[in-house]
Image (cartoon, rainbow, N blue to C red; front, top):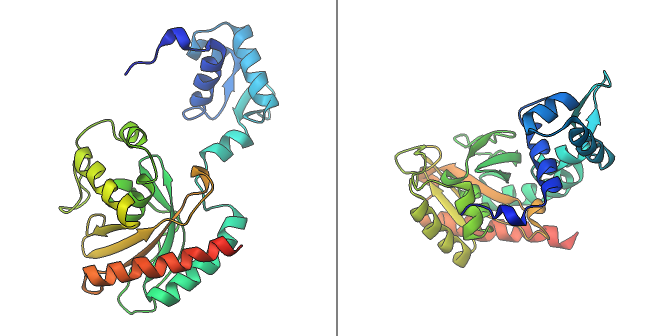
Length: 251
């Protein structure tokens, strides 16, 4: 549905459009911002000054241009990379590793992808290795589906505007309708599964620790080779991950 332009606050819209420019421009001068936004230089200058005052933009070394400020960078950073959060999650991951015996990772949602924020490797000789900093399509992973299930249907559809989804492996869910149906199941049972959907031969289960806001939401994932990841094993690990996740509530 197209937005109702009659209800748009023009100055706010200009500020938001200017912040979006920092996605594709490392620095912007007032003249460049004015040209890209089709507004006057005085308007661009006022908007940039306002963003600077709130920490969403900073002057570059030359003094002529502006770059993304710390507040804008903080908004774009997914949960789980903050030092304090990593310290709290460390004990949870260690506990989950002991309970499951399999590789465990924490993941955050970043648009329509998940990013691994931390992990611990299984002691088994044949194992899944943690991929800290790595990203995968959310719809193909247990952690991604767990985090997508915490969104509304409208939010999921905004992330996936097309019905067809990319196939990562032959087992990946490839339609938005099927994904939405699966997310309903995730919400009802409290855990998400991926059986070879992201990596062939790897089965994973994910749960979500309770978080006070979307910004704090992470998923805990236990991954194993398929021969150690049958249905019973995955369900059992879901319960073990939930016990480990409960440690966060004691802080």
